[in-house]
Length: 250
Image (tube, rainbow, N blue to C red; front, side, top):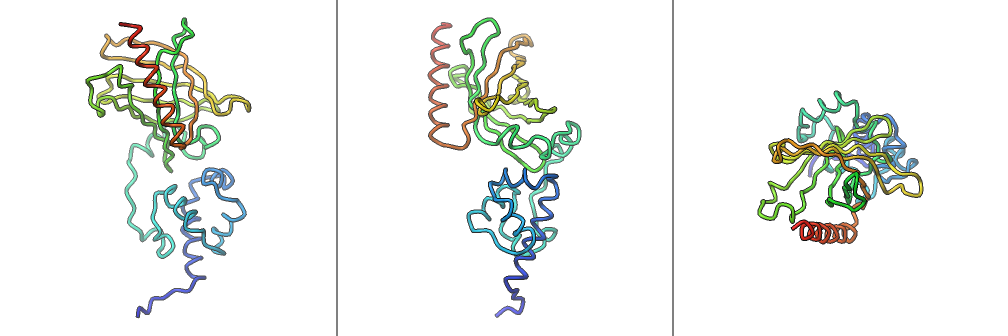
């Protein structure tokens, strides 16, 4: 039987100390609790080493901070963690938009249904799904160009990736396909209380495949969260819309 047996009080203090260290990168505990979906009073009990989270809450905390359950057993500095990409912290420093500025309230994580519209035509001209993933250092964005527009392309060729940041309440999202064949900048602002699930603005699009043509369109982002049924329904809608546009153009 091992001699290194710690009692529950020691384990609670260990977890509290590790959680305080993880939370230091957030200037607002209230905002951190909102992003985690944890009650502020209960979170303070975790920080103070007074209680443990339920298994499902512990899983949520570990996924959010990208650590594992060893934070219950060992000091954070002794746990091997995946190294952060140097570009993440460099971009955060340069853009001035880390987790303390681009908050969940400004731009929640999850799936978004993006609709682009030509400036002189009210009919939507582009549809796609994008996913925003919150990391401690930045917010990553990933999606795919619609299949009807690139029918023979492999998924890796249709993939787009980028980063989201903010200036005040305006969010800007920089995305590009591999080798920068197609690049986009979304400049959007969240809607009012009645339309808080929508972001409107402009999309600046650059295509190297069409003689470096730059176009500007209106953009509407609708937040779908992580609900699989809503995401699948939006994906089907996007596919149907892109096929209709392709047929109309042919």
